[in-house]
Length: 103
Image (cartoon, rainbow, N blue to C red; front, side):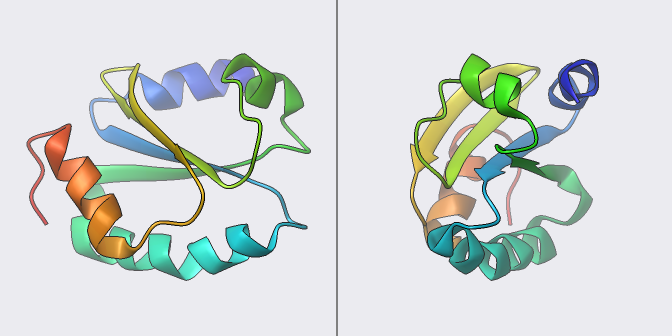
């Protein structure tokens, strides 16, 4: 996943990464919210889920200490990160703040 991850975040699109774990209750609560975000932003934003238990080196590299942790990458650079569950409107606001995308 590591080499592919660099390709993913260096996309021309804005990339929202959700670091999660299958055993995490708040992560499960975030799933339908991210689905709604995807419905609003369409193909303008790439939403990627990273299971920290299967991709521990990646979680360590980005210092993910709790899940869920979301990170927004623009042109391959991390522009924002937040741990915990956010509402759809808050996630959309973050995307709009750090990119030219409007939902």
